[in-house]
Length: 427
Image (cartoon, rainbow, N blue to C red; front, side):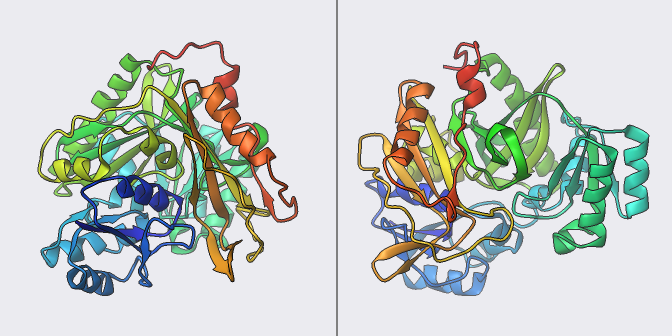
């Protein structure tokens, strides 16, 4: 079977790598991809051009298309493929609204008793600031629409909250995405990501992962799209994960069916562990990035077979390796703010057993990869312990010279788990 993967980031490279191991796959195409994806054939079509993507899939007899990023989902690429009678994996634009509008997601959770923080959706700065004054800090301010993972401010003071509101609503930092904001209760606890293959009301959960959003060590600096991740999460027991599945994932899938927005694809719940049980911080309508890069390498099943089973309404019987996987992002200096492009990407060794690289923001100049985005690549590794998986990744980074004025990476991914006395309850 020929497969088309839509997107060009590290998440899509991870999907491509998983698919390339399947003996059911003939050719993996990626549109538009990036020059680090040597396992795939590049298709010079934008991820948000449904007409050209559909025509390409027909011409090349593509048996299945997998849509990676959120923008093409909300632009209706899946709808276009369905209308053309082509097999596609991902939610329709109607179902993807659970990521496209935080206000909609919060309303859905409120209406269907899915646990989340208390909140108010605000359409003016006055309304938003009044709510901040009423509730006090710390408090969280979120742009309603898509902001590439950067539209969230955890404000520790009222002044910070006001600055975030002004930046989003008055200065239009995130364009139309910040024309209204969700201001919500600050939840204190350990965050984790729980993804699942979903078809209507049928939910097939993956193992939990933990992402690191802040740019700098010690969870300092601005929010980014993610600087690293690991899976599974030692502090989460099977009982607790089952609780999250039963109170969050399954009710959400059912709610979307009842809303007339039946969901097929990957439902991602960004959760937090609280004294009252797991609560939702955010929903995504696709594989997380960089969580995908540390979850898919632990999947024993053939990814293509899993997706085919889910689309057919069958239980894919997910199986997971008895290992840990850790991944650390190499980013362009200045990210998530302004950064230079065109710097030579370090040639990191990754040909040892259980080690890999997922490329994201890269292009090619002559015979070398050069930076072309904020998050450039992710170095990942598997091992029987989280400590060893993390050590493998950092040993890879330390084996080469990395220009500090061109790139940076966090040096404390999984630090809380490694410094905790909690045993690995999950496995």
